[in-house]
Every structure is written in C-alpha cells, then in structure tokens.
Amino acid sequence: MKRMIWPPLYLLMAGFSAACGGKNTAAHVEAPGDEKPAVDKALTVGADVLQNKTPLKKFSAYLDGFHFYNGNLNAQMEAHHYVNQINEDLYQAIIFDGNDDDAKIMGVEYIITPKLFKTLSEEEKKLWHSHHHEVMSGTLIAPGIPEAAELALMKKLVSTYGKTIHTWHTDQHRTLPLGAPMIMMGFTKDGQLRKALVEERDKRFNVSTEKKRKDREDIPLPDVDPLANAWEKGQVRQLMITDKADSAQHKHQGPAPKEP
Image 1 (cartoon, helix red, strand yellow):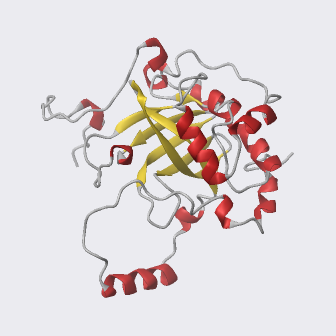
Image 2 (cartoon, rainbow, N blue to C red; image 1 turned 180 degrees about the vertical axis):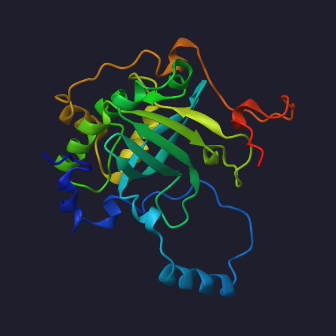
Image 3 (spheres, rainbow, N blue to C red; image 1 turned 135 degrees about the vertical axis):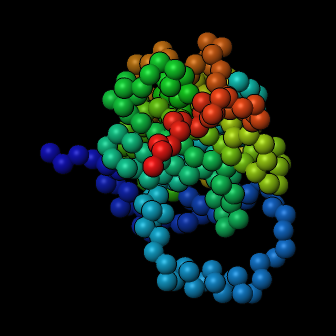
C-alpha cells in the first residue's frame, strides 16, 4: 500500500478563493528602512524569474494556530505556518505573523510523529509540545482547503509533537527581530487560549472553531507522552543571551570542530 503523505483531497483546493486561505491577515509590525530602490526591485524580479527555489516550493500546506512563550502562558499570539513534509514522520514549518505580501518570519517549527518522539532523550522531550488539544479544540485550522481534506490532515497531526522557536517577537510590536529567540508552546486545555484571539481569527477566515471542534469529536485521542508539555509541571526550558565564557565553547553550540 502506498503511504499517504498529505491527504490527496488537497487536489480539490483548485478553484477555491485565495481569500479563504491567505491575504487576510496583515503583518503585526512595519519594519524600519527606506523604500526599496528601483535597482533592487529589478533584481528581485530577475531573481524571481531566473533562480530556482526548490526548497521553498516544497512548503505546500498552510496551517493557522496559536502559540505562547514557554513559561508565560499569558503571552499569546496567532501563528501562520507554511509546512513542508520531509517524510512520513518529519515536517518543518516557516512561521509568519501574517499571510499577506508583507508578512514577517517569526520563527520555525519542527513536527514529528510519536515514532520519532520516542527516540528523544528525556531532556529533549521537554522542549516539545503536543498537538492533541490544538486539533481537538478546533483552534488549529488549514485555511482554504475543503473540510474533508482538513479533517484528514488533522487526523495525521493530532498525535504529533512540535518544537517551536520564535526569532521575531512581532506580538510585542518590535519592528526588528530583537532579543533572544524564544521557545514556544501549544495549548493543552480549554480556558488557556484567550477567547478574543480565536474570535478575531475566525472572523477573518470566516470559520467556526466550535464547528470544527464538533466535526473532530470522532478523531481518536492519542496518549500524550508525559514528558511533553513540560511547562505544565513547572519544568520550563527557555533560551537566553549570555556573554559568559564556558571553557573553550558554549554548551549550546555543540562539539568543537575537529583539528585539520
């Protein structure tokens, strides 16, 4: 049997209005800087025509959901994910603060199946969050595709885990990507995500989170690894900037290069 990657129903997307799945959410910040000069515009057009962008073409799925800063449940924001499936068990996503032409890259997310999650060390698992509640609550959506295709996709995502890092904190109205990158988490229970955020998102996309919740009631709820969502147990892991030397190398930078 041929394994399913993305649900084949994605082919039905043809003919759907672009407004259903994009260009309805402006970027949160306006970056400083002079207007792009004519020569740069010409170079951009030329590069768009002449250069190959194979890696970017693979980011074919669009998901919209919500994150919060690990260790700060009250700092919440909407996140627009453009996803590339590498294989049956591994996905990667570029996260933007909007879906229009001026959207800013906020960060990245890596998504893995339980099969790969089981191979992680105990400490590594604490950096990851589950997607079970995001799917079952209806707050994670795939804008613009038919409901049947979205449901098939959610059945695949419900048991997965994500590791998310934001590099540009546009929710704080920072016009440049300042400060340390931050590890993000996903919501795990009702009442955590601010209702106003969901209502405003639903209005823009003309969707109903409550309807999606009901439509997904029959999706089997997976067993969640107890080491994921470590913030729930007060085990918060977060990145920070430091100028303190740690012997010949910083621990977070990995092994030192071998001598030639």
